Image (tube, rainbow, N blue to C red; front, side, top):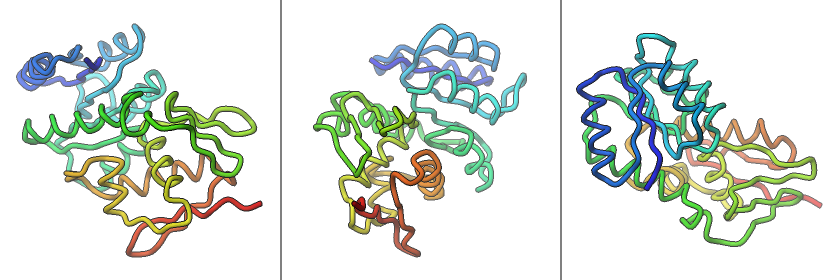
Length: 227
């Protein structure tokens, strides 16, 4: 059972989705506005957040950044009728791990959530194996921690999963399609710009600890550590 926070101001959509999530066995909290979402975040951690950007009492992107800060361990999925590429990029740069455009099929949402929760689970595909090392970087997959000589670097859920995927293929070119399938979902329907935003975040947060080379029209390669 996952703890899911649904932030949606449309009563019809909110009631329907909250009921569906409970029917799937999850603990679902429906927040019809930003104020109630903030109150829920203050009460404790969550596993996944579904966030509508069009709220009556707050800017959706600002709330996205705030919830990312307050719930760092949660997977954050934006639900929005905004289809522009810049909206998607802004949401991802505000802390979202995924972006689903309205209207969406309920089956697609269920598949996407299942994939996120499976990958985030401590005993799931990422967490089951022993720790990884890449130069001076240590990746504890069981605890989902990224450790450097200076201490722990906090990564968002999908940033962590992407790092693991790249480290396990260190020195090898990995296509965009492989990365999107392995880190996000084998049935991914969203923009691959999601990948670029997350790679940029890893470069920014880990600095000289990793070297990710962009392979134009193909994908990325994590260069082997030197020394």
